Amino acid sequence: MNIVITGGAGFIGSALALRLKSSHDVTVVDAFTDYYDISLKRKRADLLLDHGIQVKEGDVHLPWFKEWCKNQKFDALFHLAALPGVPKSLEDPHRYIQEDIGMTVTVLEAVREAGIPRFFFASSSSVYGEQSGPVREKDATGDVVSPYAAAKYGAESFCRSYQHLYGFDVTIFRFFTVYGPMGRPDMALDRFAKQALSGEPLSLFGDPVRDFTYIDDITQGMEQALEHGAVGTYNLGAGLPTRLSEIAERLAARYGLELVREEKRPGDVSLTWSDCSAAEAAFGYRPCVTINQGLKQVLSWHEQQIFA
Image (cartoon, rainbow, N blue to C red; front, side, top):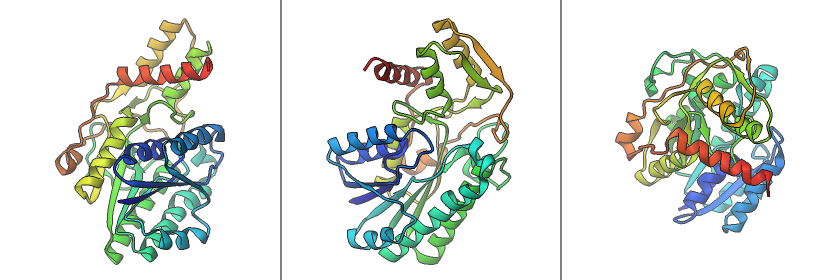
């Protein structure tokens, strides 16, 4: 297949491209926005180029993208480009409407006009709002607690409407707290790893419980959905929630660091916990990397960066 990934220099996008390259022709597109340090995105892009993956720099909002898609004859498009993060969505909600809803509609229009038969969308566990146990796909009702979550839920609705109107296959992935080497620096485990290895105090906001899901499990699930022709909405998580304070306390004790406890941030949910039975039934998704195994990989990667 000829596949394009938007947001392909991002954490999940670049990892997906590396996984798919052995069996498919893969091109990634990225605008290299500065939500976090662009040098990390450049590092991922260089890795993709080293593996023979085409990297195209550009903003998919602009007119060139639609014409380019028409000329490339893509068989599938993975739309991972988005503005992430709950805290910043409270500061500038209008930008999340533009980037997470508006850009999704622009890409859907490109898919429609170019006749791309398969569209994959990266959503988030945040669409479930506050929950008290494991969630299944039907549990998302729009009762969300942040502008970021509202934008993702709205974008999902546009995806489904385009599928209904224009007939191309749409697959929506709801990711649960994805982590791993070369991950987003604003995510808790990456932040903890960098603080621990630098001898800084660890900052813990509230006491959330998260369904931490290792990047290799996520990309394997996405590849399985592609290969099985899965259509619909699917949770991709670990199904084993962990209290963040337990990880912070272990790291603080191991590295002899102070643990600074801060108030819970507005818009953060208390618990994420995935029920992935639908993904398992549809395409055999079974996460296998434990939080201990994954955290070792994150620490190892950050250590390499410090002493490189």
